[in-house]
Length: 274
Image 1 (cartoon, one colour):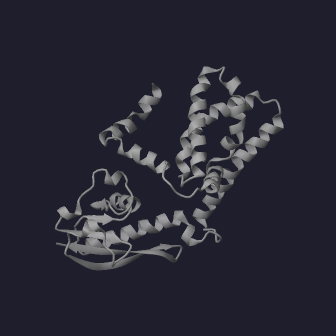
Image 2: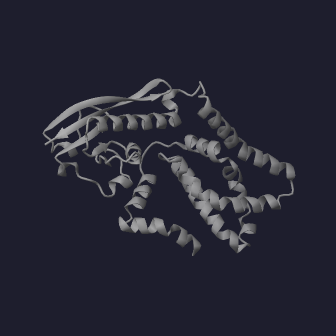
């Protein structure tokens, strides 16, 4: 009952859109592709710790004992099925690192129970050290990196700094549009970039297709219903079919995403007219 109340906003939101968001995630989890098992496993260990992985077999072996406590039944199923499913799918296709997070909430009561039942104290300390040391080290390194970027992290791989670079790009575009009195709706190639411009209060929409579905495409705005629009594109020459209704286009400016003084990508601001 409590879980249903907590999850009700998600269910209500999905009901409004005929469960398209959940359907998208389910199809995404079953999509064909190359496996990323080691990458997924490394992400779990580095960011959240190795304890669920280290104790997975222990939980299975002690199921007879755990099952004698009805309060642990929900914990067992809500941990076991999402976690094992994520591990299995990561060997077949691309799996997001956050997919297994839901299982960790149910894991901790099981871990506490098993560790309390353990009579070998050195084993408990060893498991806890192996479980929590990697994310602690990663957290410290991330904290240092935010203050003083680590030289061995290439700018192209520095996701934290890249997010800052995209935000600075969005602010630069905003200033130019205000200066040139451009008030048309701005269409963007990704949901991440759309979120930055909406955060800045600009009339922005995700251009779909092309690209990937998101919450911004649940109620898509048709650019062809407008007389003119602004578009940020990765390429100048190519044009998606969704913009074929416009007869003319004008290149305005190229913007660079700069990460720690290095340009890692560029986008182009275009204006389309009928």
